[in-house]
Amino acid sequence: MTIANVMEKRRFSATTVLALAGHIASGFMIAALVVAGSSSIAAASQTHERRVDRRIEAPMEAVWSVLVDIEAWPSFIPGLRAVTVERGEQGEMRCRSKVASYGVKMRYTVTIDPRHDQGLIRVDLDPSRQSDIEALNNTWRLTPIDGGRATRVELVSKFRSGLMVPGFIERRALHSSVAKTLEGLAGEIERRRPATL
Image 1 (cartoon, one colour):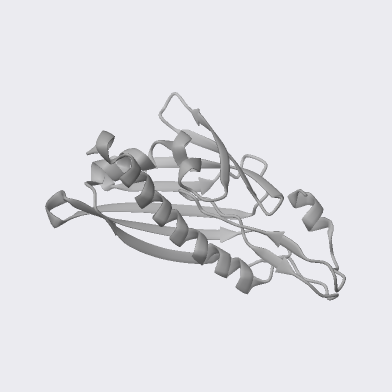
Image 2: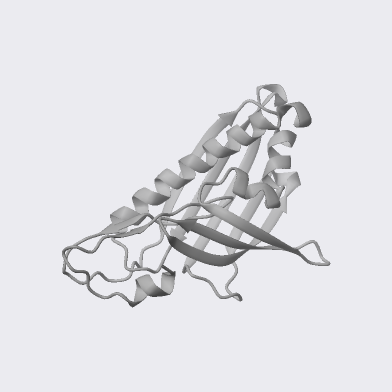
């Protein structure tokens, strides 16, 4: 099942159940969708936002090294199946992403803007490329704490699928996705600890 298949459906029978799972990784989202009934459902038009922060027991440089290792994102971002990174001559980066869950696949391209001096990484949907979603913006902010021995990691994610998804389901999926992304990041840093610390 593709996103196009889902978007073509205007009405659902009482026995129809569609599942579309969602995630932000670095800034990636797949919304989780379970729909049943016979009424029409309008395409989602609201942009949902979720802000989460977490203390990670590692220096900022260790956290940064994992976040800018874009090819490794699928190892700790749930639902993210593959990424292809394009690096420009001026240091700009684009990431073509493939996300799949519950039999639904989504593809989109984001631009990545890492600013080491600010401890900031911005991930934005690239409007110049074809995409299966309408809007995506993720901002990572790293702040050293406890004399540099630990890092406060904040992830702000904004997402709009543009699909026929009830807003409360899309919002719930985003909230879960962001929390799991930070959990995955902490786990990946712990896994790499001998090499990064």
